[in-house]
Each structure stands twice: as structure tokens, then as C-alpha cells.
Image (tube, one colour):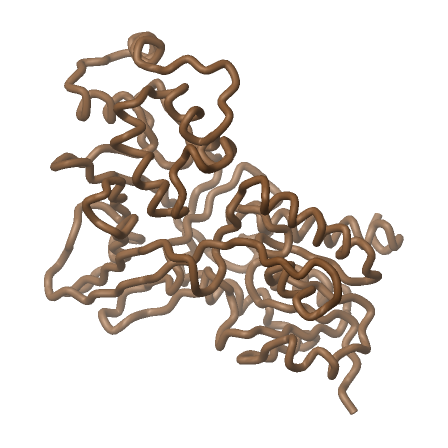
Length: 376
């Protein structure tokens, strides 16, 4: 006979770990079922053969404007300041991303010096569209056709296998254009990386005798063994949950990433931690050199090229009308279920930054427990 657990959680990433930690703090008995062989989800990191801390599933840069999220993550890790900067390789030039005055001056040969001059320049070159209908119109409405072609058109296709004109405006609407010299990728109040890595942070979060973790375990293969619970939290793709049930049947679209790792016998490979490749001359979207994070020391270096692909672990929901409509059908089915909750990027079919994933899970926990009268 299988033991009783108060809370069963599918997935040991950000969302699942937050829910587990919060309920364990109330004395609940928790079971986490994780398909991979590690905790931490896509944030999982480790020391490689060059003694460099690398992230298995791509760079994760923590940033937030939410004091409550910053306070929460500081319970489980020490952090060091890290203001992330990104460069893009355009032809033979390296330019800062997001677009700022320096980006324009380097690519266009201009000599813009003030915000007013930048605003005037943008007004001259932008293609004025009152209500952009897709990603392409959104971008050219902001920065015109030349910068769109150089920085966004082909990069977007590599990322999504769709050109901006085929995507919702929301996909590219969130990309900032700065009228000053600000070259930080994020401008949130809190920007930092964990001193001992994200994996150690998750270990600290889940270090509770009330929490039991099953790794290398597919929930759908064991779900009939664990039906005696108060609540179930599912953090995987919502369409997977309903895959074998009667009803919708269609699959949501996701994009995945293929990582091509290389250990190089030299001190550094590139001058920045992340360099994007927005052109159509190469297939990969960016190269990450992890050694730059935290100014790590090693005689060798490790780089990874990232390729956006259709197959593999789902990373990014594909936001278009077909998928939005389909997700709403799944959500209707999910809302019918009693004591089963869908939480996180894949379960909510919505892109979350790391801090948003923390906040989303914390908010859900508080909402449920306040409704139950457990929290005041």
C-alpha cells in the first residue's frame, strides 16, 4: 500500500519547488514526482570539467522588481550582483541589445548624443502604424525597416520558425527600445546570481523531512499509485495532462532548444557572456560563455551554441491565435477538476521570467490557503 501524501506535485522546477517548500512549512507531507534525474528544472546548474559553473538548459539571469520575491529567494541562497549585458554580432560589428543610442550609432554611422536626438531620429525612420497587427508591424513601428531586418527578422525566425509577420504582436512588443545609453539587458531593482548556483538554492528549498522526491519518474506511469492526496499541483504541459482523456485531443505548440557544447583550450572565447547572432548566416541564435558569470577562473573555457528547434523538452509556448484558443479549451477542462491545480509556464501556457514563476507559485499558494482560512 502506498503512503499517504497531503500534497502531490508533478515537477521539481521553480513552481513545484515553491509549492513544496510552502506546504512543507505548514507541516504538510509532500511528494514531488520529477521526470528528470535532478531537481531545479531548467535552472539546473553544475560544475563542468573545466571547473566552470554552467547551466544545462541555458543561462538563467535572476532579476525582479518585486521585493517579496527578492526576500523569498534570499532565504535559500546568497547572491552576488550581476547586471546582465548582451551583445549582438551584426555583420562584423558587436552592438548592444536592446537597441539604444550606441546600437544606432554603430550600425547607422550616426552621432546621436542625447535622448531628444534619439527620439527625433526614431520618429524619422519608424514606419508609423497606429495599430500594429503582428510582430513585424510592431517592430518597424518602433525602429523602422533597416534595424528590423538586421536585428529581429531572421533572429525571430530562428527562434520561432516563424517570421515576425506570422506571430502575434505580443511576442515582439515586449522588446524595449531605449532612447539613452542604457546597456543593461534588464532594468529591474534587483539583479543577481546565486553564489553557489541555482541547484544549491533548490536543495536548500527542498531540504525538509516533510518533502519526498522521486526522480527519474514519469507521473503518468505512476499516477494510479498516488491518488490519496488533498491537493495535486501539475507543472508540466497542460495538454499532456489531458492527453489520454476524452475531449480535445489537439497538441499545443512549443519550441525547444538544442545545445551544442564545446570545451576550448584557451582562456576566453568571446568578450561577453552572451552574444546573439541575429543574422541568417548561421543557424544558432546565440553563444554563451559561462566563465564570464561571476568572473570564474579557469585556464580553459566552455561555450555553448543554442539552436531553437521543434522537438525536445518544451521551453517556450508559441503565442498565436490557434494556440491561445486551444489553451482556453484546456483551461476550461482544468477548471472543472477539484483539488488539482496547474501552475507554471507550461501548465499555464504562458511565458514567465524566473521571478514571475516564483511570484506566480507564491501567489497561488496564498490564494488557496486564504480561501481555506489557513492564512490571514
